[in-house]
Length: 107
Image 1: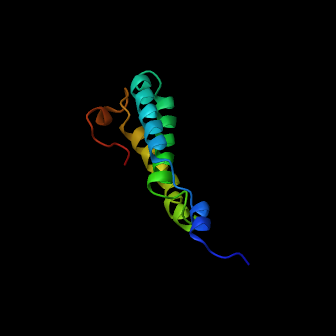
Image 2: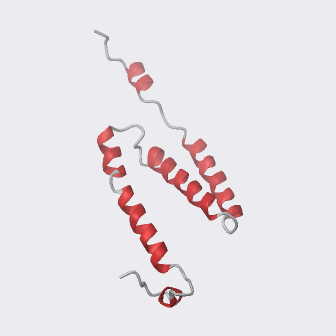
Image 3: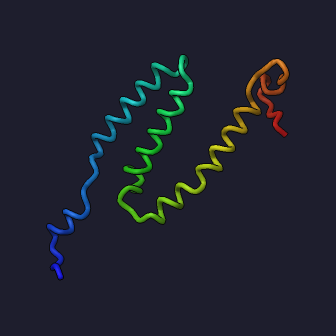
């Protein structure tokens, strides 16, 4: 059986590279700002990448047990469903004058 030492504890728990994550988030944000008007699908993918980076590193989900990750991940499909429903409901169109006025016509 191996003896527990501080060096072993430090080797087991690597410190995340917060500055590297910060610069990655800054670069993704700059790309988002430049392509926001032209490619909305790319904007969604880049936003999801930022959500994953923040959740993994700044919420420490990468270094915690799977239970905490599951508690965070299980509601995500429901959130996505609500966002899609709101986008569809509030999308302006020729037959959706309430949405153009800012009133939810989904119900």
